[in-house]
Length: 145
Image (tube, rainbow, N blue to C red):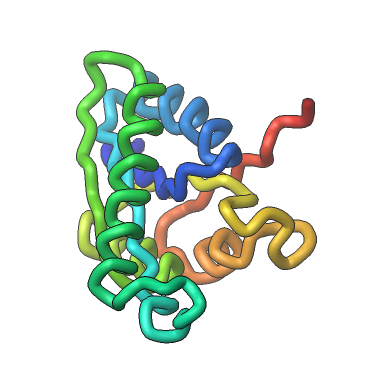
């Protein structure tokens, strides 16, 4: 049923909850987990207060994306087939583009990412993916303490 599972990650606490669900699906269906992080390039020219040149901003974001992928991969079971993917652009569009490009069967995504309570109840990226993804989307809430 599910051969290719997309696990978008931004390195947030919410992603850890999604990893558990992606891991279970991948184990059950012997599926490949595509762990994707998007280097958000929107702010590299808009944030002079960061004190970084555009190239330095992008490099810092790429390092963050790689770290986020590494964290998620270490939480997945050994023996699973894993694809690591870093894309540049906006998180919303990067995820949606990858769903199409890779023929993803299901997206497992956290309801809240780095921006906390963005859009009050559900993260703006997640909300967009739920509305526009051609593949089913499993949203995972951050576990309560």
